[in-house]
Structure formats: structure tokens, C-alpha cells
Image 1 (tube, rainbow, N blue to C red):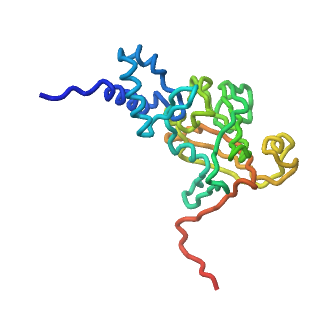
Image 2: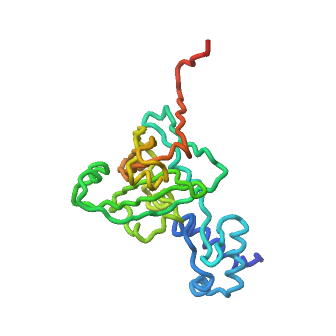
Image 3: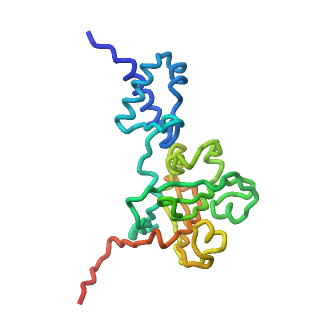
Length: 251
């Protein structure tokens, strides 16, 4: 005769399944213990035990006064690495201070209508809406980059309800089956405008990196257009070439 699976283990499996199905995204809060009592008809001690076990395993984490959240995965680093369309060159944005904490500050977000430039970049007719987000990435409170991100709203219904200071955009896009996996990018060195200089906390007119790129999903929808202004005091680009037919030896 088999043993019955304990209720707290059953609840752990339910939570893990919801994470795997992307019902709970990395960085997103799960329902409160009180709410899970109501949802699953389990007592508080059972719920608490299940949650604590998942915290111990690193699947969840608790934040005092805020709740319990899904642990983040490595998608948060995806937007620091860019591959050219041929697959032969990898362009990597290197944080000069890797031991310091990387955080995100949201500046604003919302729908954008009747912008011919953005609709053209995203391969959309002018009648369709674009959703945009402006944010700053910080290394120990020092601005690393300012990102201006735009996506087709038709692929991401409900996007306004997500907190992208906690949840990574690419985890969210993955949950909607529109994760960018192909990229077209253009990198230049330019002078910071007064607004960008203010956000990066540098002098007006300072030389910075400007990276523009398109993100394309697995079925070749253009799902992202981003402009990224990067502080060279905090980060630098490195190019790694692959599949070279001939190596040049030093004299």
C-alpha cells in the first residue's frame, strides 16, 4: 500500500508547476499565505511549510514587509549580450564592476499611438499600438545605461499590469511565447544629450555608447525595438569573432 503524499509537498508541486507554466514569473510575488489557504483549502502551517521549503531550495525568496517572490533566473543577463545576424561575432557589454549589485529603476511606461517611426521599426501598420518603457539600469546606484524599449502591444496584452522593476522583460516575453532570439543591432559612439546626461549623471556632451537593436522571435515577428545609452565609465563593449578561417599570428 503506497504512502499518501503530504499536503505541503502537494502544494510545493502546485507552485513549481505554476512557475514552470509561467503563471508566476521570476521576480513576481506569489499569493499570500492567507490567500493560498483559501485557494487550496489547506491550513496556515501547511502553506507556511511548503513556502519555506521552496525558499530553502532557492525557488522562492522572501522580502520583509513585501511578500514572497519567485527567484530570478539568468534571463536578467540576456540583454547584456548581443549576437550579430551571421552568428560569427558576439558583442558583449561588460560591466566593469561585476561584484556590485545590478538593479533597475523604471522611469515611465505606457502605450504609444500614431508614431510612424516606432511602427516602422516594429513592422506594424500605423493603426496598431506600441507599448513603451523607459528605465535606468544601475550598478550600486551608479547609472549604467538608459534604455528606451518598445514592443508591439498586440503580442503582450496585459503588459501594463506587470512591475518590470521586479520582473525582467524577457521573462515576461518568454511567458507570452515571443522571446527575442534573433537580434539586429547598431552600435555607435555619440555625445550625450542634456536629458541622457542628466539620467546617467555625467557631463552634457560626454561621449557615450548608443546601441539600437531589433529583437525577433522564433517565428520571425519583430517583437522589440530598443535604444540603449550606455555610460562607458561603468561598461565597455568587447567583440568576439568566431569561425575565422585564418588566425593572424604576432610577428
